[in-house]
Length: 468
Ligand SMILES: *[C@@H]1O[C@H](CO)[C@@H](O)[C@H](O)[C@H]1NC(C)=O
Ligand SMILES: *[C@@H]1O[C@H](CO)[C@@H](O)[C@H](O)[C@H]1NC(C)=O
Ligand SMILES: *[C@@H]1O[C@H](CO)[C@@H](O)[C@H](O)[C@H]1NC(C)=O
Ligand SMILES: *[C@@H]1O[C@H](CO)[C@@H](O)[C@H](O)[C@H]1NC(C)=O
Ligand SMILES: *[C@@H]1O[C@H](CO)[C@@H](O)[C@H](O)[C@H]1NC(C)=O
Image 1 (cartoon, protein in one colour):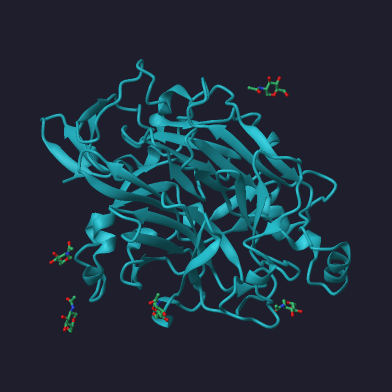
Image 2 (tube, rainbow, N blue to C red; image 1 turned 120 degrees about the vertical axis):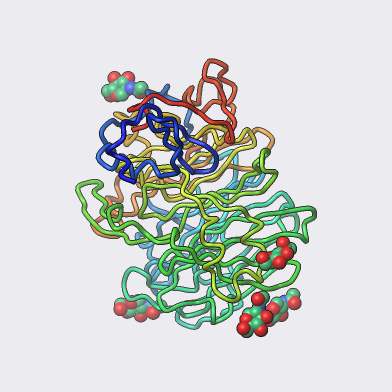
């Protein structure tokens, strides 16, 4: 049937990313909106005017420094090249009670430790990093001991007071990449700071040029019943690790691939291509289907996807080919041109927050509403966003009582392809409270009664042209 030959009077969106088109004769046809209206993409911005929210700069640095036991040890580390201040760039951010956790992957030589803490609330604006849990836990890239931490990319803190991390095992990633140790998933008990899990991914789950760089953790009925999901951003897979069974398996799906159209980045006068696949992940409980779902997106993509976690946790489905279940990974919507996002998180009130790296901004979406552009908000005023956030590279929604959204802004493209000015503020940690008064744009505020909250399974009618 040629859809465009029919007069389309109403668009209906139903369910989890499945779009139904009502034709003039009253029949419903299942289609993706993009298939029907490709020419509409990007015509209107759909960006909602937003109130400037209360983002607080928690810490900021011109360059990073570490807390050495003595001044002499620091001087020695600098003179022998173990510590090269300008090679250290913060990436991951996390928070647990009175500590912030910061990762510094070994993108170049001279990174002395790749996971550290700083105190919170901040005592200093630009504190020295304290290696976590101590200096001894961090390996030497020239003499690698793979039981130690090598190159930590990102972390996840769960409700059982555990800090999980993904260690890529890769050093010199931006100079001459070397996989000196296999990637591993490590967890620390935050009440004792003891390492409680160290799981090395089996060789069969490490492809040539794999880069494992993001992690989320799903705790079910008990702290033992926990699974970690780690994304392979260069070889487009998700490895699922079962804590109870001390096993992992690799999940693949065509929606993990990058979209070449979204691989072109133009920021800060630089132009580069990142063909990065599945990357951002956030977990949520869908009260209607009574299922836990994983939302995910590739880095080079404008779209968001979802899949039931039950599917990912069932190892037997992933042993003998993946064709049968491929259809259960749904695209749910599109953020539009320049809508690339690195990481995301979902707050207790059901609002997803996600980075907008191309827009120097933070997006928000009330997961109870359809994922259409008129339901996507931006936290910062679009004209002024770049003044405090320059390349929001990591985002966390914490588990604290007064829940917060945390951003690590790090100017990564300038570090990689140009030259950071170390006389200028390059790195910032920012926080905003999920419940900040007036902080959320109305469109993603679940408490805003003026904008009706529609259930995901209900049919929503929208005027033609309103979606894009
Ligand atoms: C990183 O690359 C540089 C340049 O090729 C090299 O001199 C250095 O030894 C490498 N470092 C490691 C840990 O392999
Ligand atoms: C988990 O499995 C790995 C091999 O896959 C093994 O080396 C390790 O000792 C196991 N850990 C535990 C706690 O059983
Ligand atoms: C896993 O999937 C298989 C095949 O579809 C199914 O038979 C089995 O019941 C599933 N297991 C669980 C625990 O859901
Ligand atoms: C996978 O395939 C092998 C060989 O065909 C078969 O023996 C095995 O039972 C299958 N496993 C599952 C979980 O379906
Ligand atoms: C944006 O910047 C302009 C000029 O610096 C300033 O006048 C305006 O108040 C800012 N807007 C917001 C919402 O901060």
